[in-house]
Length: 269
Image 1: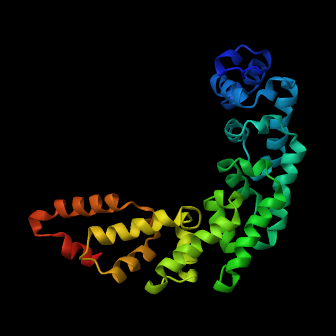
Image 2 (image 1 turned 120 degrees about the horizontal axis):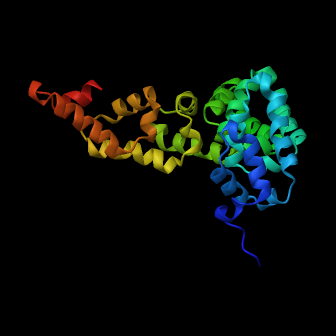
Image 3 (image 1 turned 135 degrees about the vertical axis):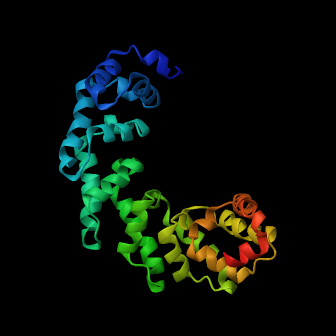
């Protein structure tokens, strides 16, 4: 079985050079495109005119919604199959999702920004994306989750559009079970997730350990007080204990001459 050509070998390929020459003024470099073509070898089998047309048609269609050619090229370099995919398919994928959620407040400009950050959204089946959102919303509807709220969170963290809903649901339920005795109900966790979406997609084991490790590191902190602080500043769920400790130590060191020690500082926080 022949080995795929390396980016170095592809730099001299006529199709690669033609596409790069056409888009050079829009930020496409030879090294970057040769690397993309090595990951998606079929790009060297298509006519350069076709590849150029594929990119330009998508950006022309969505230009009125703020999609720039240079930005779409960057997204395609992350997901090289976008260079070779038919523009009618990409356009339909985006339009289907936005049309479905228009009543919930989703607009093209915001969704296209999410697609640029998560280029998989351009080519993934819209039915899958829609289902991913709806299953999470349906599961937590009784706890107060509304589609507009969840869409807003997903737009800030577009991986939520593509991640398996069962995983996201299980992550939040695990946090709920662990902290139930502390009063961190699912509605409260959902509110925190709007500020820190990682509560939904990051491993709950990691999030739980981040919190518990801080409490072990600073036994003087009352559990209820720290969890209250975590809910006010949900990024603390994702912050490692040694990072929290170093921040505390730095503040205390800065004011040591004024008599500040960890105990009153932590009590104040």
